[in-house]
Image 1 (cartoon, rainbow, N blue to C red):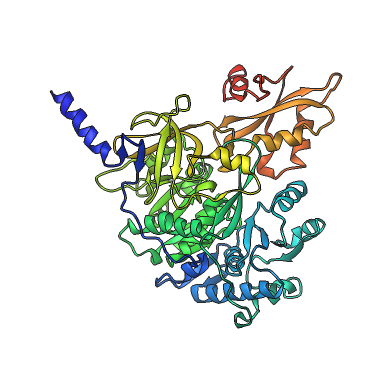
Image 2 (image 1 turned 180 degrees about the horizontal axis):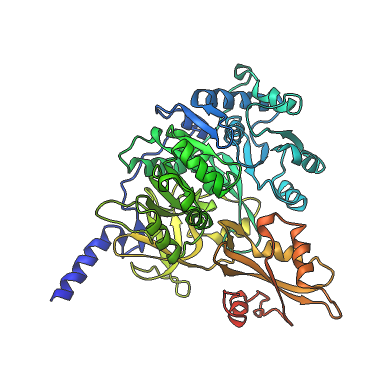
Length: 552
């Protein structure tokens, strides 16, 4: 009798967010209104938000800052300057920069001009930059002074961007001319929500990295359903919050928060050029940081540096983790070390413009291990990969997502787009997941081959393409291996050509010269052959299982 009652209660709770007839999970949060004006663009939307914020962006080292009033004026100047350079709708502008207070200014200036922005790791190798620029057909690149020659050798116009506003005008003459432009001299471009705003790169569910086409409407949905919605769940006024920006702004996680979403709230964003735990500790204390978005390796670093934190980082109200899986021990250690901090996890993809699920803890309900509840306006299915049937709460399968933040598709890759979208507009995430009886989402594993190194995505196919070009390598496969500090590392299985005496060190060094530092192969194993299916597909899981599973 008691068991029957419990089952009925669980069934009633499930029906609030899960429909057995359709197999669709709906957000437990109330829907949020999104702009209906088809001509609403992202930048106008951001600057139309009312808040009492004063300082928008602060350099963590120098204290150099940009006020909200200055931000809007400078973005409009950049837009005008780009127009004078002939950059407008359908032109693509690359931002090849490290984090700085000027990164959001340049990005928003490009979008305001009606052009398309694409971002890239500033440490990318010349070969990677060449490939990226060829696919996107880039018209202009904003980059650091030391990257100008590298970019211009590829035949692309470049503009050197300083780290802070107090810069040498002679060294950055073109940049100075752009930000000094009079906004009144440029016409206001007509931008639709359906127009492409950005092309960001992701490995998708498998294969080499692909250009993810994101619209202005996708970005507006991200601001509303991710950043503004999360802020609305708390009692504090969001313009009083101080965020530490250690995540790279070229990645969808950092880009969605620090270059767009938080600027709609009036929050202050303290920008680190790159993550350094000692600098982060100083910044948290100096600027009284309240919110710190992180990836798991940063959590590890914070735990090691806890003794150096003044008063145990008492100003921190929330730490949110995303972009990579978080192991249970690391979570427990963090909660024990910082019991005063509200810790949450989240889930999103480049293909969903960072929107997916987000944790939220209350006095009555604390769930640290889940990646949270579905974001407002989002729907999901959990699908059995063998039968194609939709699964109820408690059962795991591939996660499919549907909603207004889902990408337009992959750039110039119809096959990849068609294989990723199912039944018209359901996005296959490639992640194995399940919902519990309360609607909380848990990510268990991945169907896709992507390697998550310190939160960065690495496509095995990209590394394999580099490796197979070595004259002494006959065949190769790259897989992930678990690593306590990085999460996962790339491991190369190499078949050498007959008579070759190539060493592991030579393989590692060869790849390191051709890719960004985070993509480097960390370990090499020589094998007689690479296991493949009859169709020629590499059997990566078989490689893992036959060589000590994923821990090597």
